[in-house]
Image (cartoon, rainbow, N blue to C red; front, side, top):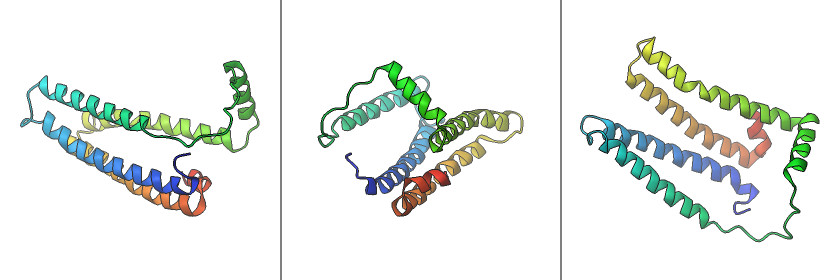
Length: 166
């Protein structure tokens, strides 16, 4: 409710792009910290965990500061049993919703294989770590650019078009 329907495509695409920029910068920082010129073990990992904890805490505080506009009467509470019955019925009806859920699950499962492909590429195919870094950088850049493109599509044609393209 904080971000209007018309603004969501742009908001999420810009957020994804900015996250990608930070991911690329963070990867460079981590390479320095874990590299030969960085602090010795275990201080290098302690530094990374401390920074990750501080940034996570800052994110949680900022998330807590978001104020949603007031809504009408609160919805009636539904117990878990009734919720699962509604969900089962919704999935059995067919249509778009079950296909979207299946596509999201399959996409997530495909993403689980990436670390194994990287291990195979470096261990069995003999590719260097630099190639892995280039692959991950290209994946991040593709995600950034794809997010901007899909944000524009969402603004012009709506979220249904983005789901279909995805």
